[in-house]
Length: 99
Image (cartoon, rainbow, N blue to C red; front, top):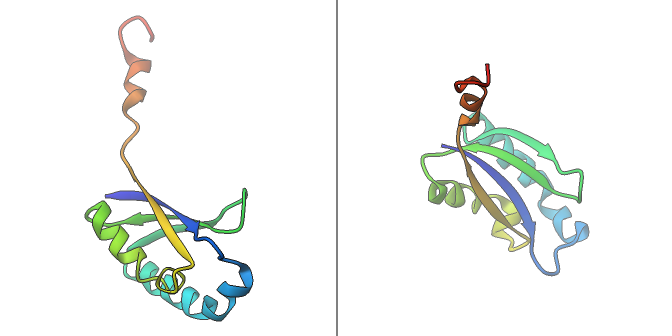
């Protein structure tokens, strides 16, 4: 299952509070990438943070994996996890009368 995972800074989270965890955060992210959980990762452009495209068997499995990130373990971030599926509306382009 493909999932869009958006970090959610928790109350009191600041870049200064993130800093002691960042080396471990990057290492953990690399391991999650090598294991196939993290498929893509992007810096958000609307605020500091990341958007991850993840691959997991379920939303619950993704939330469990994301809870292991050092910033999550430190209580500095949580995650919004949004399941994604194929865009099937392409078929409307080929419906009778639209060709």
